[in-house]
Length: 352
Image (cartoon, rainbow, N blue to C red):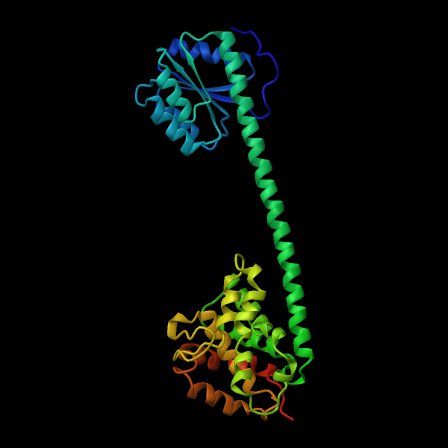
């Protein structure tokens, strides 16, 4: 019973647990496996075996009788899979029941052997079970590593894409002296307001980005319309109103990573009373992120020079926000902006 197993054991496979109700059989199996280089534990019943599996020790191999006093092979396999899914299980049976053997393999057994156990066969089956386990762990490692690399690459591509879009947004504002710095201010106003409303972490970051990119769709709007000093015609108004949907289309590659950014871009011109655009959403149907951007956008639009009017004073702008609170703008968001105004006041452009 001390014949060495041909070939080395797979790395990390030096521990095993033998579970058998017959003490003589159990001791024979322990002697054999110890001779092959294993550090062995033993159990006389299924519950004892499961307790040892759950004690935090990495246990690559379990050799167990299919009929333990308190558990049958199916119950044992189910619990092993739950508690220690990486453990390779070799079952021992006294009956040549092919249906039971197939069922055990289906439930996750690495192999099943008939008693009395052939020493040579046990040696071969144990090595095979551990090699199979090692391949499984290796494949899982490669899969996880590959997924990490793919995720890192996708994140880098997204980062480069966002940098390009942000540069495009800056270039858009650079063409219009009236709106220079608008998106950055809206982003700061929105973040302060969102923080007051309880946003934090990733949600806050998406609002920051949504504020920076909320007008990116204006890249597709003729510059003559953006800079027109007079009243726009109905057709020109229609063209201007295309920019939220166009911006969402431009940023669509972000959908799986930053859906809140897309909601900011598409819905920041919706109104609480349902008369906004592009979807005529109303009340709570408007995404909260977009309602926050709408307040920040409205305040900045009022307090900056525009081709068609002079800027509002800060007092008049805040009064106007309160006036349209509940009809055009979300009342809670307006209150939150009012509460943090002193924090963002240094960002307001100085009137000349």
